[in-house]
Length: 94
Image (cartoon, rainbow, N blue to C red; front, side, top):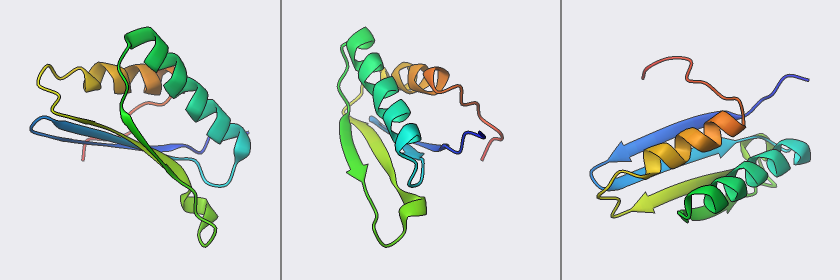
């Protein structure tokens, strides 16, 4: 089965966010949440997590992770660990 998880990272001064869209696939949803929980345990960092269920557009279902006031820029490492656990790589610079 082809893994259909789409990731987008947004970084601004002292703010970082990662959106992971997996559609209406419960196996991918579990895999994403497991990767996030494992990374929280490894790093001790706890991002704000927004679950985005969508009954109108299930193909857009996903979660959003964000860090505020991240002066030390620890979120980048956190996001990289999550992406590594999910075996996701950047396809292009935007």
